[in-house]
Length: 227
Image: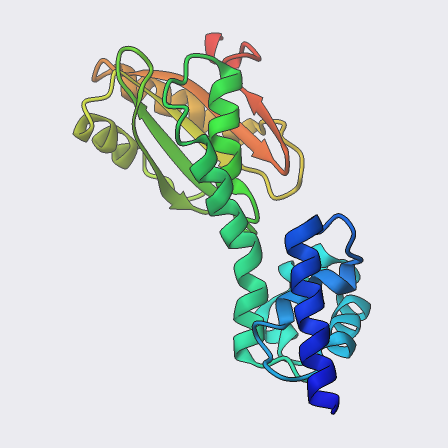
C-alpha cells in the first residue's frame, strides 16, 4: 500500500513538471524530483529536506563536494553523481546554445560566447579562442588550469596553438573565482607578454576577457590592450 502511494506521488510529480515546468515547485520538490532517478522506490522527501538543511540552498547542494554529499543519510555514490551532474550539464547546455554564434567581432559577442564556459567552474581555468581574418571561430579550448598568472600558463603553448590553427587573431579568457572580474596587475603583465609574443609571429591578441560569475570585463573594450 505504501509502495503504491510512493509510485502515485512520483507519477503526479513528473506529470506536474511536464505540464508546468519547475516554476511551481519549491526547492525541496526540485530535489525530490531529481532524487527519484537516483533512489528507486523510496520516499525521498526527507532526504531532499535534509540536503537543503545541511547545504542551505539548491546551489549549495549542487556545489557541495561529493565526499560531503555522501555523508547525508541515504545519499550514496549514484545520488552524489546525479547531483554533481546538474551544474556540469547546465554548463555544457549553455555552451551548446552559443556555439551557433561563430563570429566574435565585438567584446559583447566574445564575452557572451565565453562566459558559459566558466559556469560552475570551481577552479581558475584559461581558455583560448582562435579566429580567422573575419573573426570566425576556428577553435576554442581550455589550455590551462590555474590562474592566468600562475606557472601553469605557457606563452609558448599559446603561440603554438595559434599557429596550428592558422589564426589571424586570438582571444584569451580566464575566470576569477573571487567573483570580481577586474583584471589584476599580474593579469595585465601576462597579457602584455602574450601580446608581444603573438605579435612576433604576426598574430593579434584581439582581447583578453576576465569572467566572474555572470559578469565579464574586456581588456580591449576597457582600453587596457591599447596601452
